[in-house]
Length: 161
Image 1: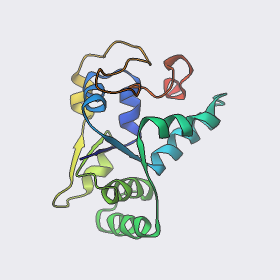
Image 2: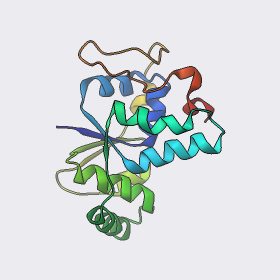
Image 3: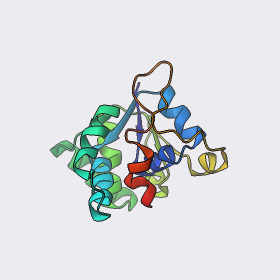
């Protein structure tokens, strides 16, 4: 079963966080179209010259959960019930609709959801305590052909945060 990840998880992955790399290598990963939006928006706003290609690179690396009408309805319920910001609720709703039972995040807002069958793991503490992995944007897991960072570290907009 796939696990969900949010934008903050991708920043931890890009930083070479050992725990994030372990999750990336061991699990089938899904992220939300909203995460794709957040990553690309940051790239465009920072003048990243290859920003137009980020979406394609991310789609090659992970499954992207779409936003549908049902997603919007579910997200509105999550936001209303928990006080969660709208984009966070959309991320969570899309990951749940994609079948994710576990969501790794660095965002405390996602922890506001209390739903049977869905586990939100705020990995900030665990990730902050771990030792960084070797900094190599093309390292691959022996069991996977995808890189653990879907873009070269030297050209990543994630390095600008």
